[in-house]
Image (cartoon, rainbow, N blue to C red; front, side, top):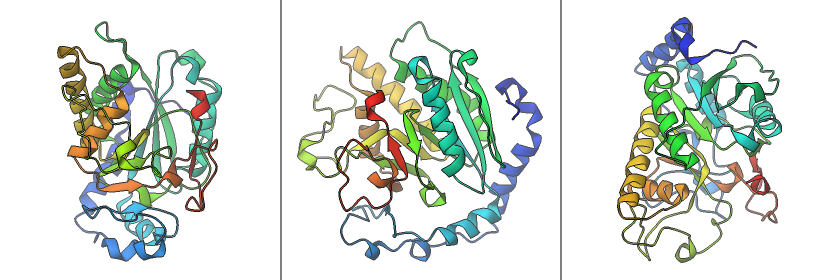
Length: 308
């Protein structure tokens, strides 16, 4: 498998043409209505629709075949960004990519964007048809030590320079995860948020939101919808680019107020203000160290929380 580096993006004419073709054909292909592929009544045991009418994707609620027919006509390309530095290279990265190769968006064009600070630690990777990977250098910033800020700055830069021209949808995922079953086109949307397995079955009043009013991530007591997991978020490249900018602004504002809040709190504040258009149930990111309740019927990704 040939590694494509960012500076070689000019050689990716075919890939960009495919992505451009997808966007052009979007006007010709009729997008399925939500009711054509999503049936919330199939899962009366869980929340399947938010109060702003966004679908919450659980096993049995979706008809993937309807969506496959639509997206196949568009010939879409999906990007998956993963951050792999320090202890999260080697085996962690190998397991992540190998499992994603087997279960992520099967049958569609996929580009894995691997952000690393040491390419010599890249494990051997074998990918199937329609998928490739690109190594992106993690550029450090003397002003920041927080790796989440560094990641967001890098993600912003690479989306602006390359990724937005190469893919139609993009996911950002933590490397300490293993795909177990198909993670398919039912997850695609303009703005996609992952419900946190640790907090889904808890009362909203107990969610670990940022409660300090001076923080940019502040969510008042009594407010909030769900608690979202930072291990997975997705959407169009533009939407993710917007989040990276808002996150950096929030962190800067906190520093000016002599505060530090977590990356996940800032993510939750963003989705509190900018409601996601699609939510992924905890089935898409379950912590296997937990007892699995009957609501979790088909685990798509196992989150390796012990590896944090």
